[in-house]
Length: 195
Image (cartoon, rainbow, N blue to C red):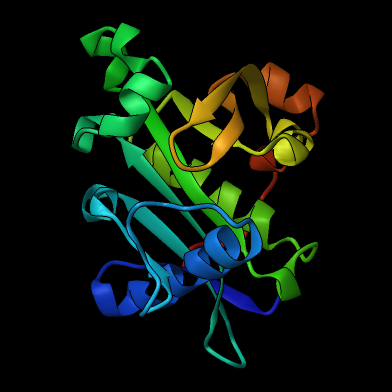
């Protein structure tokens, strides 16, 4: 992969992330996130303000070709996802160790290059450093095998308010026995995020 992984910390750095989200979620998947800006062709929302947003930036073109976002519950609320995923059932102690991952996207031209796994590994490292033990995400049915190979387990089908029918998945970051059994790339040595 000829891309660097960076943490997109401010709006200018996130502009490419927002455009890639629009391309994948609105144009390709035909989903309708309420925050979609159809004039500016971008998707950003309030959860970006307290999230770890990763970007894979193509070294040659400087275009964002992959992205993923994770929100740690200890850093702020995730209103839609708290009720959608039934995270209200978590104790205060448990919620300190929980994250929600959203807006995982790789440009069509860069799929099957390892960028998705690199993003997942980088987020895994970021979450482990912050004491996260469980991560939740939902994905379309066709991506369940991808997330299963990473080490997520399927929990149930759900109806996302703007993405429609999706599948809820959970990753136990400290379950190395299971991660080893599925040959998860999360346990392999990897490239570091560029500061």
